[in-house]
Image 1 (tube, rainbow, N blue to C red):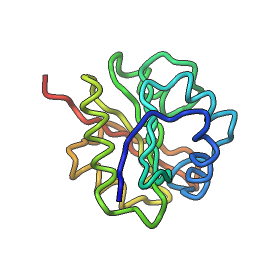
Image 2 (image 1 turned 30 degrees about the vertical axis):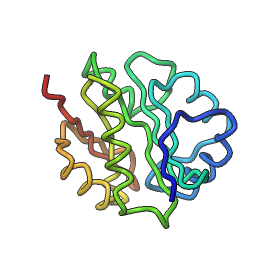
Image 3 (image 1 turned 135 degrees about the vertical axis):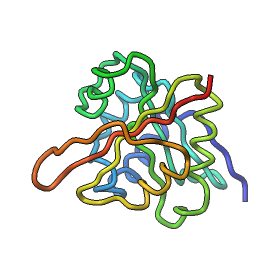
Length: 160
């Protein structure tokens, strides 16, 4: 089995979008246009491939980019130096096998910034919360979006 992490390309976007939509509500819905926009604004946008098949992706954005996300904006308003994980997702048959950790390790290797993310607490995403706590992320805030959705904000502090 040949495993690879590599930069996302325009050719990958349809597969990435399918993975994204299959992972809702853990990640928000997207479109091909938004995925193309991510290619432009993301400072980290990579895919995980096994035997040439895309099984997951992670995209992350540094401050002050053209991205209309209330969660990204929450970090922009409070921090001046970070990289925000907008979304990470995997094909369901490859979840809980260590690929998320491999992606995060690659992101850490490629940035010196603190890493920010938000995680759903309504609906409750226990798998993601446990993963991030185990990885060393700490809660720095929370927000009630509406009666059906709330999130927590977490930061992984780099040891400088």
